[in-house]
Amino acid sequence: MIKELVHDDAILSQPCEPATAEDAPLAQDLLDTMEATEDAACLAANQIGVAKALVVFADDEGRTHVMYNPKLLLGLGAYKCTERCLSHDDDVKVTRFAKAKVSFEELVDGELKPRRRDFTGWVAQMVQHMIDHCNGKLV
Image 1 (cartoon, rainbow, N blue to C red):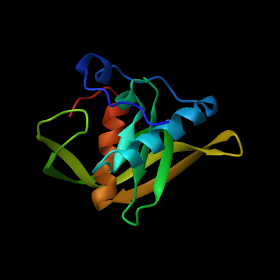
Image 2: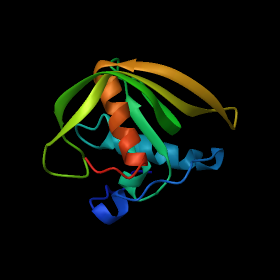
Image 3: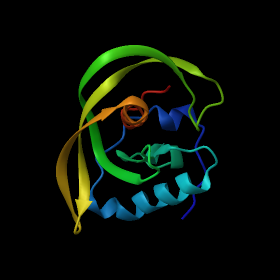
């Protein structure tokens, strides 16, 4: 179901609770909302008003991915950049890593399975942005 985006800093600045397999409908809401939102490439659950550590993003080929409970394990190649967020109007300068090692969980046959993956480039930047959302860090 397509949800309305949240712009309230009080909601967005709260650290999210761990997501569970029972949050699968929330993952679908995130995918539906991202696909219906112009220029959206990623979305976190708190951006639709649910304080769960659940994110979705589209990779360079346009394939969508869902990550439960993502955490940045290692970042290499720090650089400064300007980002925009769907939940805010202004551009913000941030430091990101060109390569990010991330742990997360993936829903497989109704169960969350642990995963680790390296991300680079634009996708690494999006994933770091989404992890910030899960931690209640405003961009």
